[in-house]
Image (cartoon, rainbow over all chains, first blue to last red; front, side, top):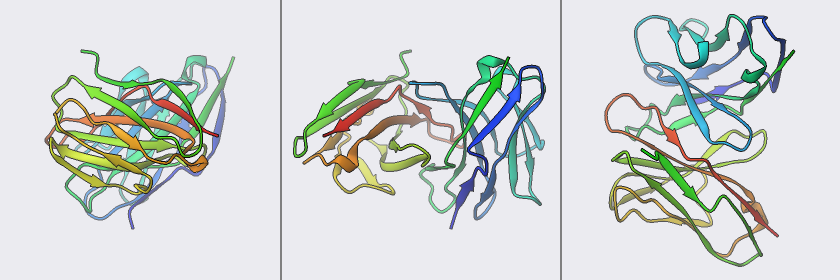
Length: 115
Length: 113
């Protein structure tokens, strides 16, 4: 079965420190991976994706993600966290069992950046 | 472009009532999706559509119905509302092709009491 796991319900970092939000996946075929961010009372916003190519993917707001095939991981990173990065982050994978582009989402990780 | 819009933003229903959640996109996207978001559970796919006139069930379709008469609109119908349908509902759309990223509306917060 295809799935996405975000092992941490919450990640706390101090402003200015690097941050990592973890994601692992299980999918048949080549993985198409995504990160989304959700601010309070808002819809999900697309941050970045990996489809093919370089393992380090750069996205919006200074975020990047590293694809690791051997570890089946796609961790989200940022070199220097901002208080405004505090939000709920979702990792997602395309459902490879269909051609409809359905996404399978992880349960989400709350990022708290403290001043 | 307004992107994906959803109405209403909030709604309280009594058990057994019905309602329609509206979703419209102005990006000419063929693919549209309805999700529900429950705390700590991520997003679960309710229904999706690959084009006007074509819909199919997702992971959690029971208690819901959809239609897609135009490219722009993808309403979600709740018949006989139940407390288990208390949730935040998101509509999303994407273009055809291999990019696959979906664009989300702002959501509808529904409470059934």
